Length: 136
Image (tube, rainbow, N blue to C red):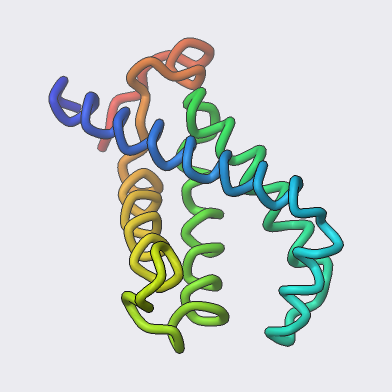
């Protein structure tokens, strides 16, 4: 992979990871019971709220560190598709309230899809632990 591409993938990885980490922390601060209740208002089972909260927290840390980038990015793609179609699509792209439409979810979907496809080994634990892998 070219050096410029690796640096841009690093930026995507760290910003996406930081965003997911902060959202995960926010869910824990709200109380997972409250998050589960919110998910329930959309007809989703409570366990999904716990699953998403833990994945945002752990996945955010993993992305920042570059550990399992492709795997965690693929999982985040699924979470973002779910968020868009269950909670945000009916609100619209922009709802008039900052961050309430699906614009952020769509941007995170694009970022994580890119990372799931390409990976990111620059300044990553994957690169340090397993070496740089040649791309096909």
